Amino acid sequence: MSVQSLRDELIAEIQSEYDTIKMRMKENQALADQSQVEVQRLQERNVSVNARMRRIEDAFDTVPRQDIRVTYEDAIDAKSRLLTMRSQLEKLQEGQQQLDHSSQILGHLLEKLKSAGNFGLGGGYTPGSSSGGAPKPSLSLDGQAVVRIVQAQEQERQVLANKLHDGPAQSLTNFILQAEVCQRLFDRDPDRASAELTNLKAAASQSFQKVRDFIFDLRPMMLDDLGLIPTLRRYAENFEQKSETKLQFNVVGEERRMAKHTEVMMFRSVQSLLSISRDQLSAKNIRVMIDVGTDTIKAVIEDDGQGFDVESLSNPSQGDSRVQGLNGLVERIEVVGGKLDIYSEEGSGSRFQLVLPVFEDEEPDLD
Image 1 (spheres, rainbow, N blue to C red):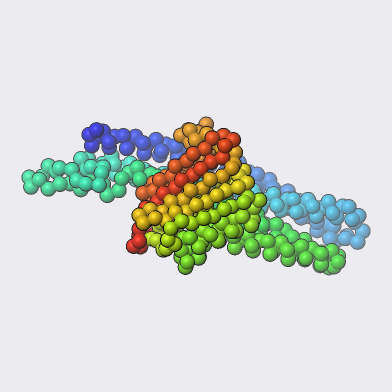
Image 2: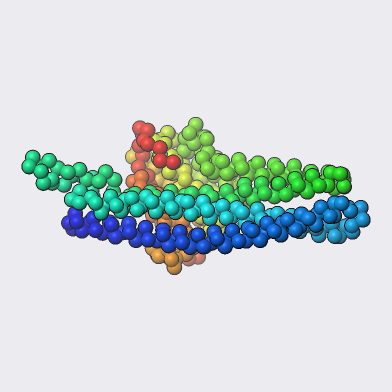
């Protein structure tokens, strides 16, 4: 295939991805507009409920207990719905910014490729037309790799945003609501306020634990301090303690430090695969085997979950929605020179085999 054909094929592929992102931006903006309208409606409801609460507080001793309870429940529900919808709107706006950033990168890349002329697309050189025969340099980075890196970054950001919204953010929202209830009860009903404070203390402890867990999932500090194997072993212990899934963790080979990007990629990959096995495939038993070799490090993860049709991964629009995140994981692994093999059948469990090259010297940080 000629250089021109490769160039045209790459331009067509990037153009398709660019058009897809533009369409997603349009759909995302429509959802954001709808959410904005809902936020305004909930704000009006919240104002109305707060006004009812103020009237009850002014005549607290004469209002029936049932009316007080119903009003407080309405207030908590209104506040919760408003905070949730605001969070959803913020997430949509954040996603819109990320999509816009991706479209700008791809648009810039398209311009560069279309104006590249006779520049090659590989990592070498193409013959020049100058009298001295000096070669013209090719583009420094393969365009397909750029597209895959951008997609991987956006997918990872979306995953983190969802985890933050469903975990610590929701817990802290409930924490705030309970604190407001306690504040209103201090002067009116000290006994109930004391009980609510006890609940508030327990909620605070749970919220802080979720924040600590989120930080560990985001970037465990011991990965930098102790390395990959101790961190994976600790993660496996926590994983089993906080779920009904039994996890067996084994290591073969010499436990040693590797390049930072190798340790980060292996940890992230095992983390993602365990989450898919437990949360998406409903596995009750998982076995993890880490094989540290001279030139490669291999992870094998086997589960007794529901399984899935591996062929569905090649058709994201109609495939199994439970495991579509595997496509992004495969791309991220391939970017660093690794490989992920997937074996599964519906009703027969799954087996994931991940291999990464090992670099002893420190490489650029890709986390």
